[in-house]
Image (cartoon, rainbow, N blue to C red; front, side, top):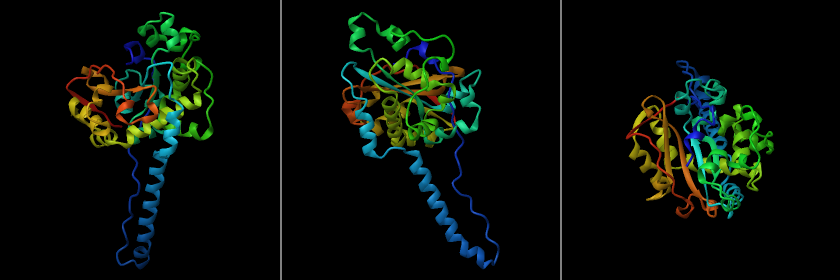
Amino acid sequence: MRQSSEKDERGLKRGGAPCQLWSPIARRQGGRGARRRQPWRALAAVLLALTMVAGAQAHEPQEQREALEDLEREHFDHYVLALTWHPGFCASRRQPPRECRDPSLMVGADDGFVIHGLWPSRPVRLISQGVSVSEWRRQGCFLERPRPAGDFCQAGPAIDIGSSLEQELDDAMPGRASCLDRYEYAKHGACLSISDDDFFDGALALTEIVNAGALGDFMRDNRGSTVRRNALIAAFEEAFGRGTGSSLSLQCGGSGNRLLTEVRIGLEAEHIDDFPARKSFAPVDHGRCPGRIELRRF
C-alpha cells in the first residue's frame, strides 16, 4: 500500500529486449560437413537454453524457503512486495533514468517483474509511540534516523551482501544503478532487525516465485498489448488461488494513466515463509488502474 508520495521515490529501473537463444545458419546445399554439424548446433542451443533458465531462477525451492523464513517477523503485521513492470515504468517517466536508457540494465525485465522494494508495515514500538500509518508510509525508518540530504546514493551506506547475491540482484533490481537498493533498505529495513542480506535475498526469492507462476506467464505472453484489468487479476488468482486478488494492488501511470508500472502484493509477516500458500496473503488497496491496461515492452 505504497502512498502516492512514495511513487516518485524511485527515478529508476531497467528492462530488456528478449534475447534470441539461437539462430540456425542455413546449411550449404549438398554440404555433408554442414549436415554433420547440425546436431551439434541443436545440442548447443539446448545447453544454452538450459543455462539461461538456470540463471533466471537463482534459488532452488529449498533456498527460497530458507530465504523467506529469514523474513518471518512478529513485531509488525505485514509486508508489501512492490514489483515493477519495467517497460511501463520507463515509458511513464518524463526524464527516464539510467536504468531506462542503458540496454545492459534491461536484462532482468526479460524474466518478468523486477524488484522495487519490500515494505514492512508499522512496527509495534512505533504504534505504541503514536506514529500514524501515513507517517510510517511517508518516512519509514527515517523517522528514527533522518534521511541525509541528497539523492538515493546518500540515503544510506552501500548494502553489504555476498557477491553471488549481488550479481543476482543486479539483474533483478535494475534500480541499483541509481542506488535504489540503498534507499529501500535504509527506509524499509534498517530499523527492523532485518539484515540487508536477508532483506534482499528474501525479496529476490519472492520475485522469482511470482515470475515463475501463472502471473509471470500472463505478463510475458501479453507484453506489448492491452489487457483487461480483470484479466490481470484473474491471472493473479490463477497463480495464487481464488480470492487472493484482494492482496493485489495495480499501479498505472503515463498518458491516461493506462500504462502498468507496478504491482504490489500484500503478505503476512508471520506467514511469509509459506508463500505462495493462501494464508501468506494480506489485503491491500486495489490501486487506480483503468479497465484496460497497457503492458509495454522494450
